[in-house]
Image (spheres, rainbow, N blue to C red):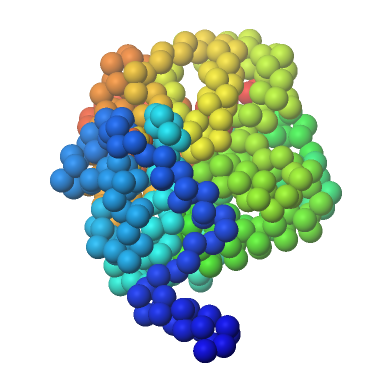
Amino acid sequence: MTEEEAFEFVKNTLKEERITPYHKNEIEIVHSVEGCINCGLCINHCPVVAAVGVDRFTGPRSIAVELSRSPPEFWSTADKIYLCTGCGTCREVCPKNVNVPEVVNLVRARIFEHRPDLVPKGLHMVREIIVEHNLAFEPWEDPEEKVESRDVRLERLDIPYTEDIIKKNAEVLFYPGCQAEERAQEVREAAKVVLNYFDVDYTLLDDMSCCGLPSALMGDDETSQRLAGLLKEKVAGLGVKKVVTTCAGCTSNISDISLQDQWSIPVYHMVEYLAEEVGLDRLKQALGSSKEFSEVTVTVHDPCHLIRHTSRRTMQDAIEILKVISGVKVAISEAEDSCCGGGGLVAYHSKDVADSVVQENLISIDKTGAERLVAPCPLCTAQIEANLFKSGSSVEVDDLMVFIAQRLPKK
Ligand code: SF4
Ligand code: SF4
């Protein structure tokens, strides 16, 4: 047998056995698993295990110890692997830095490649939308209805509408993410009001497309990479120097893409951008003397994609910003940094699990006595708001950008 024939033989055997050799960038993740000492610390901190028990979700240790070492049997655990929200708590507490959330993504990618029939139906539906529209949410059929919905939301929140700015060579690309583009339009508009107020030289994309995170989370690496490439082309074509987003998931994903592909362009969450580039002094000047609003006690939720996938610093910045707003008192919730259940696309196929995970947050939010909750992510905001409403709580929920835009003096 020649070397080439031997190579073909091995490749075909692997294919028959449904084994995909690890890519270079996956080797480090696989090696991290070898460090597991089976201590079980991660299980005690996993919010999904706490919410639904180990019978429904075997938890991070099982993923690290058993699942990750049996590539041919990845699919035998398909009913469990899709229940991880990707919160990253297990990785944070692990004494051996085992990267369980990345192992989960790797296993989901293998299942998607070899046994797509085992991928939950809800994720296939999201995939169809992404492949057809390059967006993770079905775009509005009627553009006029989209505008009407936006205007109703803005009127209710007393946030002015400002025209979109689309131009080349702006300093900043403001990237709202799919949710704020198609659903939580008030977040996109509020961020524009804030950027305009502080005279930031920014542009939007003329044709918004997904950053690829939802595709990566469902295991569709091909689509995820295509979308990342598309965004890279758009960013390069616009000639911007910075990217700013209002979504925690987009922030962590685009930061990773920028680092891996050496974009040499820093990626910020709006909160970070305001704290670092605008500065607390200017924020205080603008937000610190309004008499228009009555005093309010606010509590916050920390999105996992910011604190555990990007940097805990961002939420410290968020608290600092809230503290300079006149009349705002901040009350910290005990479960402030606990996953809300909205991540990992879990709600798209197992909503009961996502909604069980958020219960701990709801109890702690109520205990703070706060009248409002703010979160710098439309996904967390929607998940917590829907569940607080269901529970009969009177706590109002807003995205942090909406809260800030409402309190800026009208120019
Ligand atoms: S905390 Fe880390 S070392 Fe301990 S069982 Fe979990 S993955 Fe293994
Ligand atoms: S990433 Fe979060 S949900 Fe997933 S296994 Fe780890 S702690 Fe549990």
